[in-house]
Image (cartoon, rainbow, N blue to C red; front, top):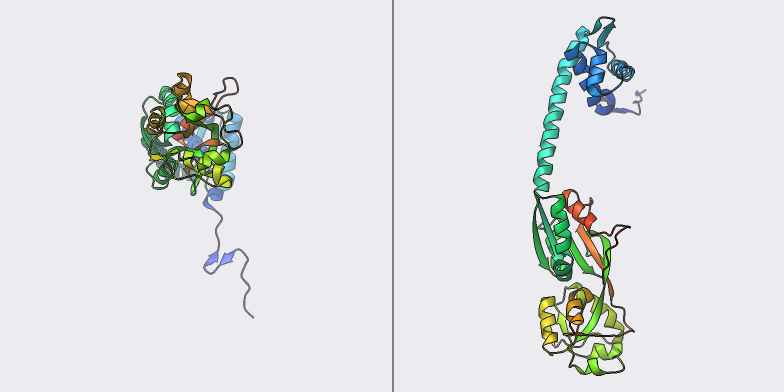
Length: 324
């Protein structure tokens, strides 16, 4: 008859319990080293900021776990047993290795925290990020920040290629391969030069008329273009563009010159509208609201300076940030 194996046994014998279940924790080992150095459980407890009863309990628990007596206690103090002296020598090596581990991790954090690479789509890069980065510098004056500006597709590509630590985009959803959090909202608006016929009309253009009109547009891949394409899809889609430009500043300049109408973020045109260089045209029957998002590669949330920057983008309850 064949011998049945224990359910906890493998081909090479019993499976050992995890190391963490068999080895004392670092706090207990540090206590043992302090007892050995100071010759007193009470002085060791005071040095480590714990009570003497707690220190005694920790030593007893370590002795039970290891199965050997470590410390002889007497009114004259505490001294190591022979096994205790051996365990203390081994404990010293473990604690030294842990200190080296801690120093190495600290160096990694310092290297991570020494720089922050931010990628942002044009509207956020021009109109929101400067304020956030000024606030971040107050929190982390030693962190060097680099900013890469581009459209939403370019920001996503930089994050996925490992060229940026955190990104900010506008659009309808989080780009594929990234995680994100909505940090605010923005609204697009139709703008023209003051002399354009739409600026003098009593009745604003309908969505179908906007869709059929050649506009000055941002390039494909931009958050502005994505939202506009979606908003006008039910009205025949966008007409062939009058001009297609790669920056908000270039689009605004073309509209101000009288070349034609455009659809841009209210954040981007508020100064020109206030100065009457541009006129907002209401088109009430299309949705032009979009989310502003912080994005990062799928997985753990941002840490270090990226985490701090993310926190600065969110309004506090007592001092809300108004966004158009």
